[in-house]
Image (tube, rainbow, N blue to C red; front, side):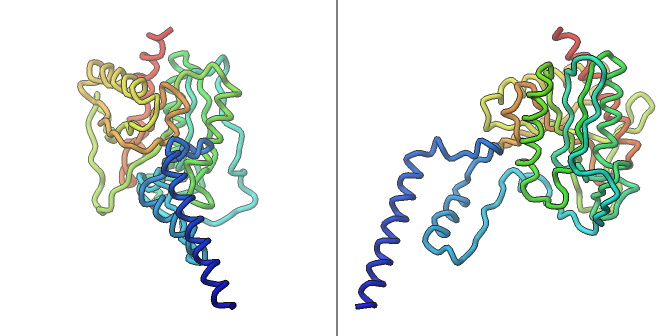
Length: 293
């Protein structure tokens, strides 16, 4: 009798799981996590079904947006209770802000800071450092900026995009005058040789790129905005433009019609080269925004 009951329970469980999967497929337009802008891939969906049937397996879903960025675990970073909280107050220019700078992977660092697998909680030599230069270049042109330095990737690198989504959404509500959002990153290479640079106006600059999501309703406007930046850079800085990389993941770009995922340099670029690039991009962005007024 017990054996019969166990078999019946298994059959009912399997039928329930199949019904769940069918309902999920039939309602695929609901297959997004709107709180974090996540797309569920076919692989993740398969894992969901497996977990529904065999909960004890404990397989975790991958965050596809994090997977699109080099998966460097934040290691060897020491917690220091005397340092500022991860959720520190952003730097805000006087006047109505037009640009919001955030960092999904705020601990990403450049040479000479190579510790912690090129990640650091300290601001110097990181993407936050480069963000400061970008903000200063904009402010010199009369463009007010909000620069958020929250460590969305510390202490956990996983789900960084979900945390930065929440931060960005909150700041856009607080500063409705913002016209452009920049998520500032750096790229990574495994080679131990220095990353390539470009000479622009006598200054050594790190290369840069724009990652544009094709999976949002803002795709066309974001792409057009990036192209307008490259047009100015082409004419003002002798062709020093950013490579445009299109990807299907959202990268939170549904939050603005002028959202830029900007990658300045690589982990093996010197910080000064990246600061030089940020200064130029700030000048370019400032000109584009002033033309929109």
